[in-house]
Length: 166
Image (cartoon, rainbow, N blue to C red):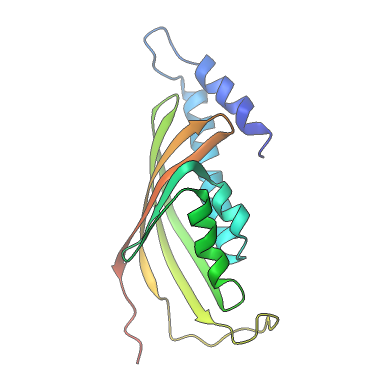
């Protein structure tokens, strides 16, 4: 999919009408590229792949959480690298919507439910007991076209519910 991003970008920019508006095929291509970023983010996050996790962000991209802010790919990767092997997470994403603003920018919302538990032993892949999700909320995303295709410029998680653990 990484190789398709530059082609999609050329296609999207070339599919502008004289007034600068995108045609529907170009909009769908941008939406598909941004939704792929959402999926790539979740998979890299849950597999504790720091490089894959950071790669979905623009070089100066930003991850905003209720308690912390991480700017740039190095900081974003470091966040995940520190937790690798100590915790297991599972993100469930549901409603996803991308709004194309123009040929180089889009916004999105993604509803998510997140489970996370300490592993104790990183090599143990048996199911872990859980008292429920640690968060239910929404990601507010800004996407932009970079020289390497579409990337997340800013991703902010806004919790909507917290689980009342006993």
